[in-house]
Amino acid sequence: MFNRFARGTLQVAVALAAVLLLLLIGYCLAPILYACRWIFAAGAATLCIWVMVSKVLRSKRAKRRGWDVGHFGRDEIRYRELRGDRWEQIIIYAEMCVGKPHHVIYFGNHDYWEKNYPAWAAQRREEIVSRIKSDYHPPNYAYRDE
Image 1 (cartoon, helix red, strand yellow):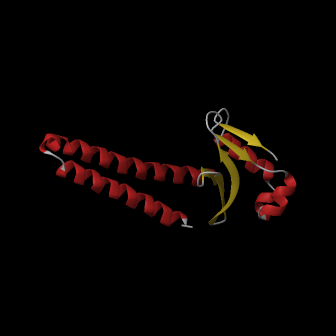
Image 2 (cartoon, one colour; image 1 turned 180 degrees about the horizontal axis):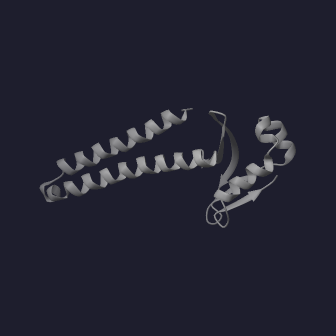
Image 3 (tube, helix red, strand yellow; image 1 turned 90 degrees about the horizontal axis):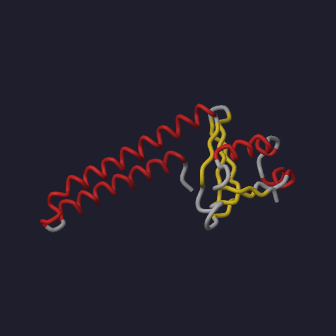
């Protein structure tokens, strides 16, 4: 599993690889597309800028709030909280669905939290659940406390 810095670096590297690929396509295709190479380059540059700006804005928002929620893989939600000078996290199971809602988040009951999550999270279940619900709300998300 990558840490946050490595994951961000990997995303930037993928975006740069996409830029290079688009530039290569733009420069190497048939003469008909010769005039379009700058369109490919502009699109790739826009994509890179968008990725970097969105990462910076998300990071600033998370630091300002002191917590962050995001998808983690296909079927999980990651809740992160700034505790002191470190980010602590818990992973909450969610299920991807077809249609609306497109995700069902399974919070679990109080006993489940006591057994499966660290003490800082287990004691604050209601607060964490309300924060997740504030970012992931109906009709796109449904919740189960089972």
